[in-house]
Length: 240
Image 1 (cartoon, rainbow, N blue to C red):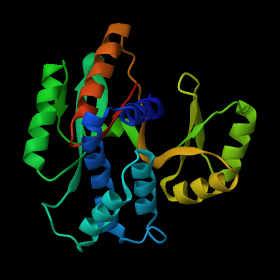
Image 2 (image 1 turned 135 degrees about the horizontal axis):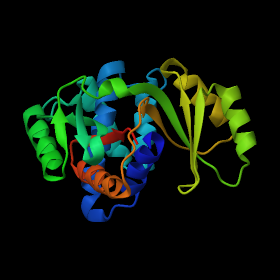
Image 3 (image 1 turned 45 degrees about the vertical axis):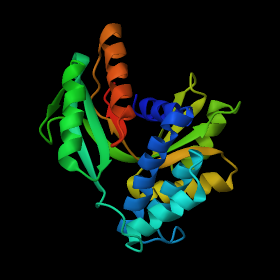
């Protein structure tokens, strides 16, 4: 579910109504700000920033919002508290392990609200290290299948540097997984081959998978949706 869950959350955000769009811009503005703070404000030399900008643009985030987020990250614009990333761990229904990635200007508020969402939906927060050992971090590139044959897609992805591939035909996409250090070169090779890349970045995939009942799965998907609706939650990974 790693690629599937991640992409499902992205698709949900793409389809939000205007009332929620400001919250989506806040989420992606924080991603841009953090990337610019860590590696500088030039996307030509800061690959993480380039990916963050691509993600923000895919959500139709206005150019001026992106530029303001970059300046906030580089320190040219000082108009708020420092944004920090945190990774929280928890369990959902059926002992489904969850990694919850957040970006916030108030850690105490965020951890309290995330914990409340979990406890109200038959989940719980657990100490760091309790579930993270069930996942490994990889580069992830999401591409539309668009009528191409699986064999051709797999061959081209491997030639570009993929370690693994997962097809999600119900979503019309496939996920390419790479070593972290190979993400940039693989993405660039795929772009040269003319692929329409829908999303790219670092992700977590499960090394140990849970086997919930259909009812537990439905409950956990509802929990993940509630978490991802929270302003401070960037994405949620599950070991399904």
